[in-house]
Image 1 (cartoon, rainbow, N blue to C red):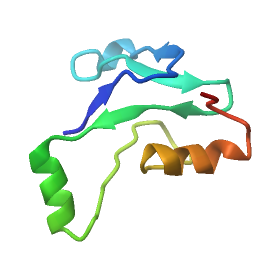
Image 2: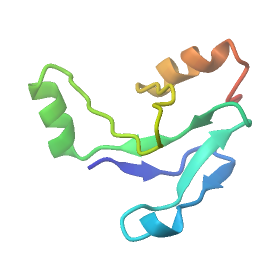
Image 3: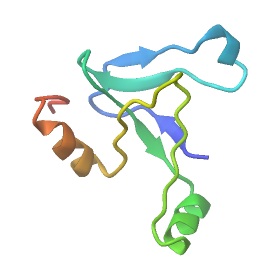
Length: 90
C-alpha cells in the first residue's frame, strides 16, 4: 500500500479519529483551508502492478456519506488542477 510521506510545502498535519488510530496515521498536507494536498510513495512492486494493469490506480477514501472531490496524479498535474484556486505556492 502506498505510504503517505512529508513533502516540501506541507504546512499542516491532519489528525486521526480515535476509533481509527489502530490502522491510520496522521497525514502531512499542504492546506489553505480550501484544499488539502498530500504526497504518497509507492513501492517498486506497486508501481509495476500499476504499469502491468495499464496504468490503473485505485483510491479508497474513508469520509462519510459523500465522496469529496479527489485528484490523483503527478506533482505537476496536481499543481495544474489547483492553479486556478491559487493554492500550494512554492
